[in-house]
Length: 236
Image (cartoon, rainbow, N blue to C red; front, top):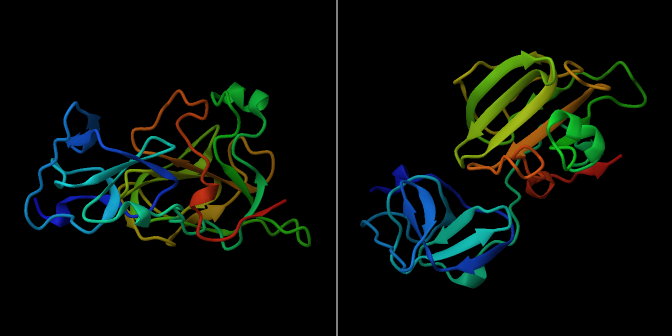
């Protein structure tokens, strides 16, 4: 299988070494033996977690992230494994967080997120001009638009499925600038922020959810996106 037929991401989170994994149809599985076979010309020399491909390199080292994702490396020393995964571009020109992941659990339990807020809220208006709250919203990674629609809760929103298998979601938009199945690059404008749906004030709600997410994690499968942003986040 050629290298281009694998999809993986090169950096993510804090990891620990594990040696009892192989892949079956792209999903890691524990085995009593290390079953690792590699076709010539595949992913030697890379670090990442595999989301497709049927087999993995001999002498591969496996790593497990705190979120339950798996890294693998071909011919890379353990000490060179990244300890941070700052892979996300900013969804707004300025990142000022007004509500963090996990806050207000009693309130958000009413919407199915028993352990609190399942994303991050970012300010879209400035105190100097309270009417200036419609801001360009951008894709945080390359991907494909999987939803571009409107609901009573989310308002106008966009969901993007990324090459690493993760999803990002952008809620409460005033307008949507993309369509379902459209390919977008990192930092492509996908809409304009707003105050639609169940929104208490103009803002952008951003959510980030892993592939094979745990729907029972108390956040509807979403994880805290803060550690993955390349840019500095300020907190209101």
